[in-house]
Amino acid sequence: MYKKIIPYINCENELTANIVAEAVKYEIGGADELFVYNYSADEVSREEFLSAVKEVTKQIDIPVYIGCYVERFEDVKKALYTGASFVMLKYSMLKQHQVIKEASERFGKDTIILELDNYKDIYNQEFINSLSELGVYALLLKHVELTDDLRYAMDAQSMSIIIRDSLSNNDTSSLLQPDKVIGIATSYFKDKDIFKAKQSLKAQNIEVNTFDSSISFQEFKLNSDGMIPVVVQEYKTNEVLMVAYMNEEAFQKTIETGKMTYYSRSRQTLWTKGETSGHYQYVKALLLDCDKDTILAKVLQLGPACHTGSPSCFYTELVKKEYDDTNPLTVFNEVFRVILDRKKNPKDGSYTNYLFDKGIDKILKKCGEEATEMIIAAKNPDSEELKYEISDFLYHMMVLMAECNLDWSDVVKELAHRR
Image 1: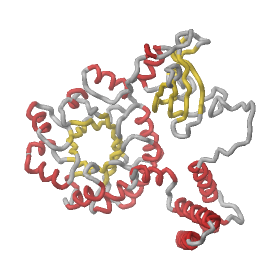
Image 2: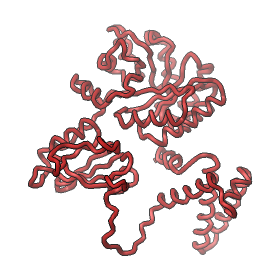
Image 3: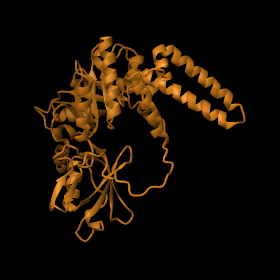
Image 4: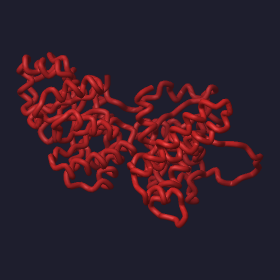
């Protein structure tokens, strides 16, 4: 298993927009996971923090650790309901060990990380065993002085270990070498190239998560210019953005940096998409077709892909025959966007605004009524009636989602976890 670089963000007294922007920057920069924390016991601060983490998990794909003040099981539940994959508990702030047991039984034994008060507690085997029995998945050790004795003590544990370190006194490779250490949590890589750091670690025979092609460039079938065409697609919407070409050098640079790099046939030079406009393309996946003569790149596109300012280079319609391209999730998102727009920009005579004006109780009442009508329709032999009632229910459900600050990405992520 590869070793992880886990940047952390102290979210105390920080604006949500700044937290989200930094989280996105870390992800596209090559972070494997992200640790965000605010251990304030103040109720208002906690709720603001949880709301901020929800925004973070909507914007990034890498797993998120959330560190927050926890008194009861309900606090752990709220933390994980933000979309975070792990909750980080401080042992010094933990009032009831039963909270760990309840949370691990409810959410699984791979969700609870415990930050020890002193890294030397790792030597107390009886204490560590008791934490494992409660359901702790991994331990966080801070500011360690790495010695042979400590390495031995860490590798003797049944639990995984994450080391939190500023890297001002220790180097990354030394901290990652013990077998039980799965990653480093640090703020050292803020505004630094994590992909470059990983290449250095890889050169030291430390297994890290980098892009590695399963097929060598020599096996590709190239055109007469020694290049391969690349079809570029937005990874979430599947929209085709552009077509460009790579030679071997461009391909290798793309693999090393995680940014799409091409060969310009007109300028006879390499170019990294976005280096002048800022509209970078970050690699999510590269796929080779069956003939090995075309690459499909799935990317995170920042800004428009086309130099004209169009989102895609394919905007000139040549011929068209009418067809139904309805995509269920696209329709749900479009309807939901209209509902959100009504909430932000009220319109006279709008039924949606009428519901928002009446508030949560009215919305819940309508959801209940529509659910009942849907059940009644299901008992009738005519499926047409059921179709209309389901549509009514889904509309009112989306109004409820908007009122409660949820969107389809929240629901889809939760469903994805249950697959």
